[in-house]
Picture 1 (tube, helix red, strand yellow):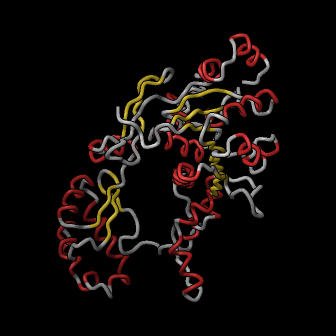
Picture 2 (cartoon, rainbow, N blue to C red):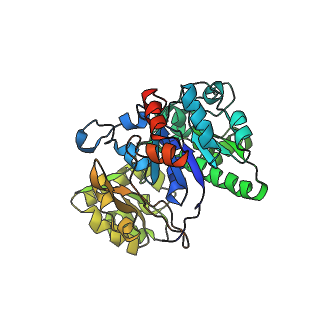
Picture 3 (cartoon, rainbow, N blue to C red):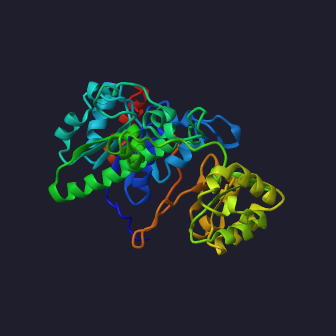
Length: 397
C-alpha cells in the first residue's frame, strides 16, 4: 500500500459539525492519522439525519458516517479538569487540531491556541466558524443558510421578481471544510520548513463570498453595476422537462444553431426570431415553448449523447439514484464500499481528487463512539487499566 501524501501527520479532530469534520476527513483520506475526539455523549453530528433505514441511532447518522471515514475515535470531556489535562497530553504528540467551537470557547478552558502552542510550538490549529475568530459578527451563531445569505450568493440566485434562492444541501459547509483542509496543508508545508505552527482562521461566510469574487469586482469598479438574478423564462435559462426528467441546455460549446435545431428536431427554430442572436432574447419565452413541446416525449438519456456528439452544452439533471449509478463516476471509482460495524456494508461517496503517486485509500469506516479509547489512553498514553476505568467513572472520557 503506497504512503499517503500526508503520511505521518497526526490530527485531533474536535469538530462536531460538517465543515470541521469534512476538513479533517480530507486530511485522513490522504494519509493523515486522524483521531475524532467527541464528548462522552457523542458529537452533535451523530444526531443529524438522515439515518440509515430511518433509525435515529447515534451510530446510524449518514452524515457522521460519510464525514468521518478513515478516522479513529475516542471520547473526552473538555469541561472537566481531568479531561483537559488528558487533552494537553495528547497535544504534545500531534501536528494539527481541527475545531469549530465558538471563538473564545477553547481559550476560556485554557485550551486556546496561545495555550497549546506553549506545549507544542509546531502545532497547527485550524478553526472553522461561521464568521471567523474576530470582527463584530464573530460571536453570532451561524447556519448553512445564514452563510449563503451573508456571503451574497443568494442575492444572485433564483429568478427576478421572486425571493432569493438557497441551493440545496450544505455547500457552504463543504466549502469551509475544503478551504480548511487546503489551508492546513499549506501550514504543514510551512511547519516542515520552519518548525513553527500557526493558527488558521477560516470563516465559512468568507469562503462563500470568495466564490463570488468576479461578481463583487463589478460593483466598485463598474460604477455600482450589480449582477442580477436571471429573468423568468426565456433563452434556455431554466431546466426543461423531458419524458423521464429534466435537462439543461446552453448555446455555445462549438455547436451551430443548425446543430441545436437538429437535436430538438424543431425546424421552426430556424425562424430569424430565434436564429438571429439579436432577436433571440426578445423571443426567448416562445423559443422555450417550442423546445419543451419538442422534448416532452423524448428521453433525456437519448438526448444527452446526441448533444455531446453535436458539441452542444447540455446537462442532465441527475436524481440521487442516477448519480449513484452514473457511469462516469463509476469509471473513476468515486464511490467505494465500506463495512460499518453497525450499519453493515454500504456504498459511500469517497474520492474527491486523484493523486498519481499517493492515491486515495479507504482504510476504515467512521468510528463508533469511543471505539479507540483503550488504544489511545492505555496503549498510547500509558494509563493503567485501573486508571482507564476511573476516567470513565469520572466522565473524563
